Image (tube, rainbow, N blue to C red; front, top):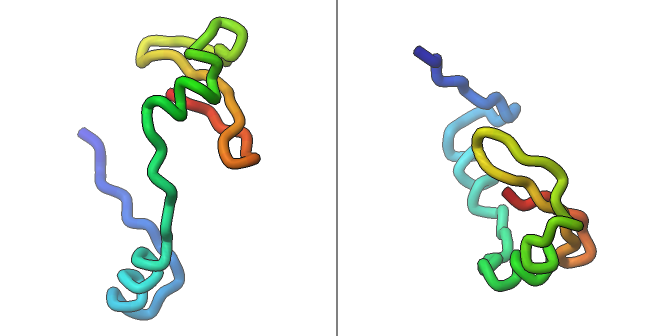
Length: 68
């Protein structure tokens, strides 16, 4: 059985933690975008595969990404 781990952020209170979380704005990424940046999940962009699936590489918003 796994124990739950608590992330320590250096905040003094839970309110400050919530404020930090609200400030994070990640862009929504569609399946279509992921398909495009990985070349249609092609073999040439395959990084590796294993028991839990495959991982592909791509470039999204000028940033290298790994897509599982």
